[in-house]
Amino acid sequence: MSRRNVVEQIAVRIAGEIIVADRPGEAIKKWREIFRISQTQLASKLNTSPSVISDYESGRRKFPGARFIRKLVYALIEIDMERGGLVVDAIARQITDNLLWLAVLDMKDFSKPIDLYKFSEMLSGEIVVEGSPHTLIYGYTVVDSIRLVLDVPAHEYFKLYGSTSQRAAIFTNVSTGRSPLVAIKSMMAITPLKPSAVVLHGIKNVDVLAVEIAKRERLPLLTTVLPLKDILNRLQSDARYAYP
Image (tube, rainbow, N blue to C red):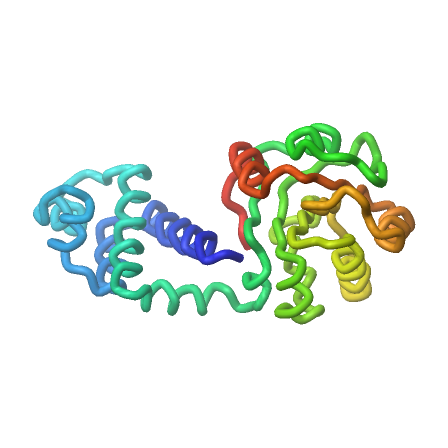
């Protein structure tokens, strides 16, 4: 997972805890103190007054709503990042108890499942190995294939699936496509799970062995040369936070 997504994960967890707390004000205060940020510093970041923060924390003001909480949480994180990110890094170590984040660039679930052909259209992709017309994709994981092979132990590959295996595995930094398919084949020796589809980014001609693995495992295989930034923008427009 990229640092950006680690930060997003931290923000979602903190905001969620505050929103569902019986006393949201106390939860706000707890997290502010964990980040070692004063009411004055937080208020300045939010362009409000310290008394407003104090009133929320004490319960004198009505719960501010999810939108404000999101801004507040990101303000805490931004202040910490400006200081070097020590608290963010400490929290990240607690919630990312695996090495997979070194290779994952993005991982989300779709708000609604998408069929394989619509998914291919979203990516301006070419289908190399056909899948069932009823194949549904519930989310996606974008992976740097080189970092996956070099930095992530094979026994952690199954964590690519996040909350569901019915997701597309999108591999970047691909030269022939062989390594990603071999990695998936290795993963299946550990767990019977497999992705709904595999996408090889940046190539048109796929290694013969990779194609054969996809066919034998009945695994839809796609390619796309769409710029990665455009891929992420298209996918994220129809996704919600999911990892892990």
